[in-house]
Amino acid sequence: MLIGEYLHTLDNKKRISLPAKFRKEVGRKVVLTRGLDTCLFMFPEKAWNTIAEKLAQLPVGQADTRGMSRFLLAGAVETEVDSAGRILVPDYLKDFAQLKSRVVLAGVSDRIEIWNEKTWEEYTRRIERSADQMAQTLGDLGIL
Image (cartoon, rainbow, N blue to C red):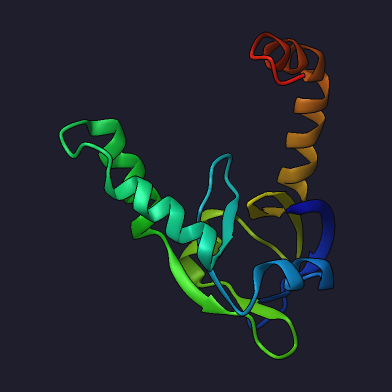
């Protein structure tokens, strides 16, 4: 399971070094795609294949499912973790997530989210203020 939060640097060649803990979990091949809340999603190959299969089963006749499939699949790129533990972020994904030199990698169960540091800080402040309400919702669902 991918968990934890790490501050890293996007170098001038658009590479991010993955934390050693994440490297063990994701393996050598990953998929990067546009994520929600203006971040990138990075999936290990196996987790991505599961998601891609589910997306392929969605009804094409519904605009929202078509749109989400396009958002995730058309924006995706397969990449390998190099021998130094780095991944290359294509320009279009770097621009989408507004990545600068400092980025946050957040482990979120089956994926890693890659955030602009400032955007992450703003987002976490916002969800921290809503934690009680989110806990109530999860309680209503029988999760907490």
